[in-house]
Length: 287
Ligand SMILES: [Zn+2]
Image (cartoon, rainbow, N blue to C red; front, side, top):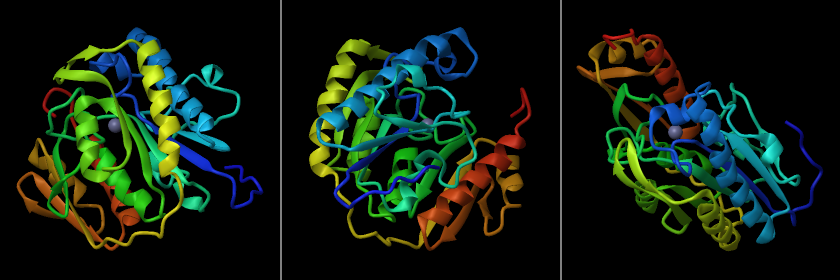
């Protein structure tokens, strides 16, 4: 990653861009790379992300870095983004969805296109794996990707300033980032249905909220809230069994594993290992 020589006066915002919570997205084909629906929805996803970037720049941000955080991490249309932003695209990153937060130069992060967690009510609700995880808990609190990532960025002193997604994603964010500005781009009807607002409307809403969210930007003292005990429940027992090959991971019930780390930096890396092993253990048809 390129590092600019910079003074402490520059304000840099990181955007973590996931797709299930984007404008117009309501079912699997919308977010599955390679499908015609995904091609169409990429434009609306890019519109949400660009609107957030424009709002941050309106509000005084000097730099905006967008980190792709969905599936292959190759979804956004670079050519449709404002020329002042930069985008990190592609997979294999130390901090996955919040890669880029660890260099000490980020003053605020936005979770764009986020969604409710596994087992929760919400459009395309899940946590990392599309369907095989039925619940995640951090120190007994039900966890979404937003909550997991909020713990990670807090360890770097970076506040979550803006969250967008469906109305349930916004409600979820009240738990992990109460002060953050929130924009619901659609209202949940079922896991695969929502009342959607148009990209023109949501872009205006997101841009205004992002501009306002710059009042929340500014690094804090790093938070050390550990130790973190993470529990993951799968929909099949062999996935729990398979994931125990990851050091420190113990099976605590038929379909449930747990591990404990002092930091969520380690916690999210172990989560990534567990979900990678578990997804490799899934068989077509039988799961
Ligand atoms: Zn996601």
